[in-house]
Length: 309
Image (cartoon, rainbow, N blue to C red; front, side, top):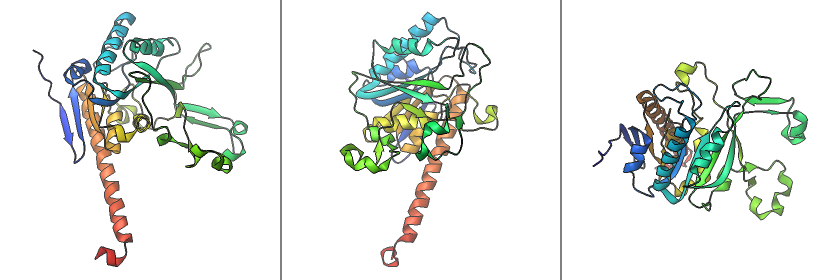
């Protein structure tokens, strides 16, 4: 009989519970109830030789894809019928098939409902942006790893594959609404009454600027917390009771859950990463609480004296 895993760290608030496991995600999935997780947002190892602390990111391709099939099958079992798996996968110019091979491994278990392109860096010419953008010069924003090659382009984007049970999961598309650039014609369209449109499947989310990688980002492959935050909002916060990241890393999904007030389960085989993830989640929760207290204090000061009495 399998041994029931105990969370390495548990953090409870009045409304949420966060559990971090220092364990292989397959073992964590095995003890979760079927249909118990609303959303999974994760970025597994890409098998591109990235230098993690413990995990060896150099499996033979067949073994890597067999493992991918196994963990996605386990994830599909715990996902609710209307749940979402947001799967971030990158590649490298000399091995561009990785992301496509990974999503093909998911095909026996889940349907590919949307493909989102995470843009990490972009160059925009002033003339192409149009007068309404009010650019004074050409713009280049974001971060990327320069490639010194006469064959390959700098890689400024990664995929986020949105996988669901049957491809019919409803989304809160306007939760990430982008304002219309020309507001004058909004009244013609009933769906545009709020002045925003569906953002679409290209998300520009740059990394935060850091001073020292070993101190500020002690993990070789992580995503900004804004990325899982947008995934959770897109799925619909009112329908999320529990979110999960089976490859927690530095805890970007945990941070997003703390900001949004969502319960979380995370797993990682590296204790250093788990400790950092817990610290980042606690800092995000403390920041949220501080802002809430400040907002309440401000509202109280603005009340008329009679209401305060």
